[in-house]
Length: 474
Image 1 (cartoon, rainbow, N blue to C red):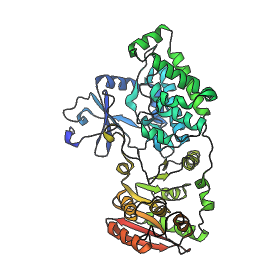
Image 2: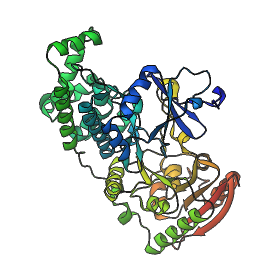
Image 3: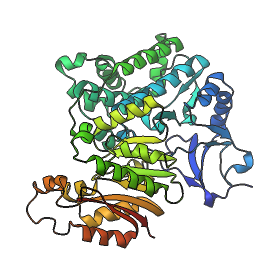
Image 4: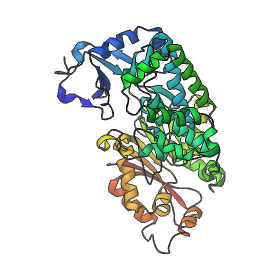
């Protein structure tokens, strides 16, 4: 039975390549291919290198659907079905090592593809996603047969969305996340070049991949792609040279390391002021809240810090997204999860007072954090006071936001830090007196009751913090 066009939801982030398009039918992720792309797919599917990538999970699981599954009235010659990624994230939400590992996977795949007669026509960081701490390449439609004498078509995208952000942080100690968030196409070479003048021009990777690349772009600005390809073929550019170039970039990326910076949050467990009794009570409460009811498919841990409670949540849930503002903390957590082989926890960099908005074409090409959430459970532990006092977000807004991140019937496990708590007093000391008259437990409980049913309540032994489990809409 053919799928009705009414049941098809095009993926907003998939429209730039007319040869193939991702769309959704129910919970299925499908990709339509035109006649030429379908021919490329058949050759790709029969290749040994691609079969190996699928078997090792480096490329998302993909299968061909029967022709009858093609949406009615579509022009697609074939339709593929992909595995569903647990949570779609964006490169500006990744830490340095996450972006580097994603870049290395992309290069590894390209290095395997070239000798087999294939290349990738795209080089965007958005072509990769995560299964917990493991990167996975998702743009199967990007593979195409390589033509001798032609350069890697995705090189510029790779530089703008992966290499340049890595150079920015490794060489200058500047967080790349705001730069990538500002432009969906990544960091232009001309925008980065002014930062690499003087002796900085000589830093690893900068002369070739930034200054020379930018000069070549400007030199050939008036030339067509066909002209440039013809010139490269005439100059003897070969597949072997392309492969050597990829290996050189891979060596460069592997050697890049983030510039170390001090972070208060890296030492949070020692400096946060929790007593051992408070910590034990908090862990017991969170475990009980997540174990009570259906097993959560997705849990959001907001203000995850070192991932203590994200790890705890992973014992009770299929997938956990651990959100933390400090890139250095997220990077430390990611490296630990990666080295342990943890595939249920995805750490992300995000300021909770300024969460990722929609971006790209019409503001929908890259979905906002709120639109991607729909969690079965939300952990907001030691977060409310930082938003309400530290960032001046009205308490009703904080409660409404937490509830809206949940799917209907989901659970919010939230901690309220009383005004007399040492951490709250520290935040209040930096604010005008009387600025937060409504910041007290009775008002917080009233607000929670407007968004759901308070199923559990427990005061920690310190007496200055209270935990709640709220069933949203209950």
